[in-house]
Length: 86
Image (cartoon, rainbow, N blue to C red; front, side):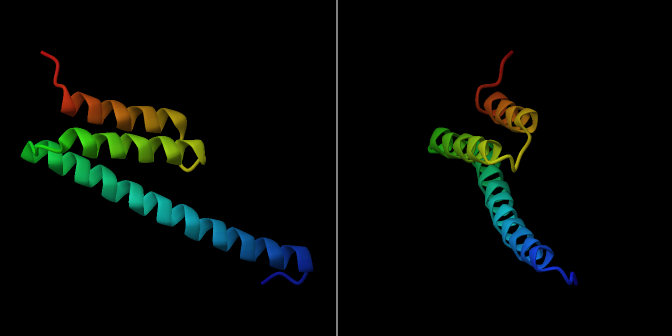
């Protein structure tokens, strides 16, 4: 545990930010899993579920929780599963 006042505050701030980032990541994983499940089951609302997943991925990338290339890759995988080419 740090002794300096500013270092103590940094520990608290980092803990709060880590908790927020973990919540966003967990929600993102759930939304992506639901989208993949809807695509696998060929549900009638699969387009809306994928749109929601893409929106959540973009929000996570905007907050720098996901790297922009990782976000692009995840969106691309969902798009390919939604509209298979070939």
